[in-house]
Image 1 (cartoon, helix red, strand yellow):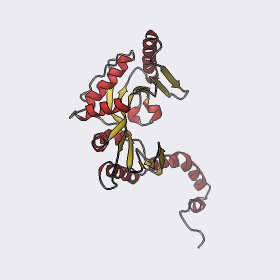
Image 2: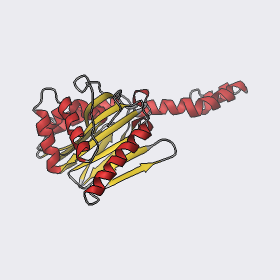
Image 3: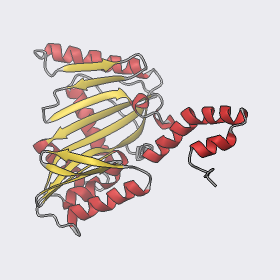
Image 4: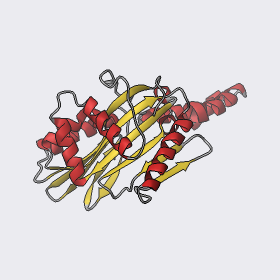
Length: 275
């Protein structure tokens, strides 16, 4: 069980994969996906190729869109999924993956909290014929991810140190619980949630039930108030700027101090010294 002072900071959909047949470029799922794709580009994310199971298309930021004949596939994650999963579902013929997440800030330490969950899950598995599988990965930089169940099953979970994966101050000291539903389970879950005017408590309930079924009693205080969306991850442009500040700026300052300011501008292509 989490410490009494643990605080739920976010609940929501974290990932959705949806399909539609006979989709037309100007209406329906394809049109919505194209709109979201353009938004990702406008806020500074790069385009790249995308392919899956015969679908070919592009990804940009938190949006992936592919086509296979007259079919369209759309995958959203992060804030795009949190904000638009319901619209995507209503325009889709099928949903094959749907992830729900709960993010909790803990005062007792992220690693000790995940350790406690791991031990409870191991005891539960041992008492049930070593099923479901419990697996974890931990590194020297603070990364720690616990996997509950098999990826090929209809429901599978990750519990991990969120700040180490997404180094935004909002996530410091936070444990992220994610339950991934697939195939028929995904469709049943999204159908149930889409009927709710305020689906966040039920999303949290799915996570709580999954963790309880794996041997850990997850009590989540303040679910009704937990409507805070996780902050958006940085765009490609934001990451480029951070890299410039951390890796390039010190070198440029040293060159300027050495009297090479003009040469720096020329090397960067910011001035033309040919005239």
